[in-house]
Image (cartoon, rainbow, N blue to C red; front, top):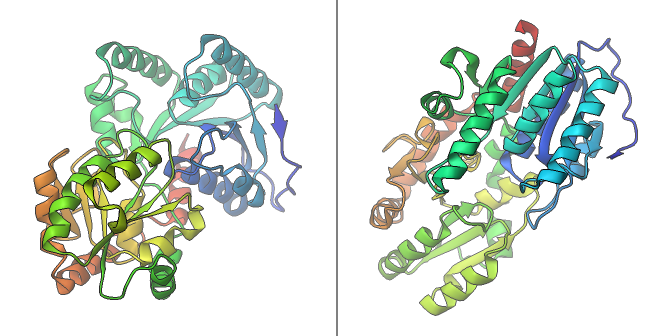
Amino acid sequence: MTANPAAPTHSRPARAKVAHVITRLIVGGAQENTIFTAEGLRTTYGYDVTLITGPPLGPEGSLLEGAWRERVPCVVVPQLRRTVNPVRDAIAFARLYTIFRWQNFDIVHTHSSKAGILGRLAARLAGVKIVVHTIHGLPFHPYQSRLSNRVYVFLERMAAKVSAKIVCVADAMIEQAVAAGVAPRKKFLTIYSGMDLDAFLESGRFRAATRQHFGIADDEVVIGKIARLFPLKGHEYLFAAAEEVVRRFPKTRFLLVGEGILRERFQRALREKGLADKFVFAGLVPPERIPEMISAMDILVHVSLREGLAKALPQAMACGKPVVSFDVDGAREVVKNGGTGYLVRPRDVQGLVDALNRLLPDENLRRRLGANGKRLVDPTFRKERMVEHIHTLYETL
């Protein structure tokens, strides 16, 4: 168990002692959301906040150093991992229980499935009075076995019993959790994920330099995607659509932001399709540079098969970009058909092609939908509003 050097105490008296627990601080929306929350609660509202996490393993990149830069005290539990391992999980549970007992937290707020199950049960056993959980994406879904889903639903129901409140990042998560019998509807609350919205609203100044960096010509229309190069992120549907799109609009380029285990497989597939020169792999990009990446795009696509509410959607909309998304989970809460972009049925390649073909030749349409998106996300997705809602929840509890 390791921790960063002690951060300076806040000048005002601490409102409450809070632990935020997440499985790993990799580059991702849930992780960035958690850091924003911990930092905002501490600096704006005077909470005594500690962030507890497992090691940031994997090719996605680490946000642990970013949390330390924000002066959020962090504790790393080496055994807290995403993959299921009964022995390691038992040790992680015992360490979390010990931390909660020694530190005497008033509130334990968990994030992600593994930390949510182990953390909530350990907190209740340790006598923590208030336990809160945030669902960024449900662990049960149609793309895994029925047995796995049954196990996860059972564990989520058990953990929900010790939760004072369950926060969801989209209304769709509430509907799915209630339908699965995780908990009664009154136990849930939607709080949209926050971001440094001004950085996206003002991203236009990066456009020319970013496109030049990637060798993108002024007259090329760029379709972007921000996602880890992992299964269920839907890249294969974009690749299939790209064949037809490029035939009709040769001046189209694709910018993929993210890293992962499937990179070599994807690059090989694109070479076989003769599309390698049409795709730019930006690789791992730190969160603070995402506005630059989106500035180079003209359209953002989100073709993941499952996602609570992908932050890439409101991020792109804040940059004034139209979005095309598979109609999954919370996407329809920000993607308004013909208003801010287009919704497409999951796995519908032809529907994806049709939506892109409407946007690619029509710059005025792209501008109009992008302007609508800007108005929709501001101030709803500001990190300050998210932290304010969580502070209000804590005060109520």
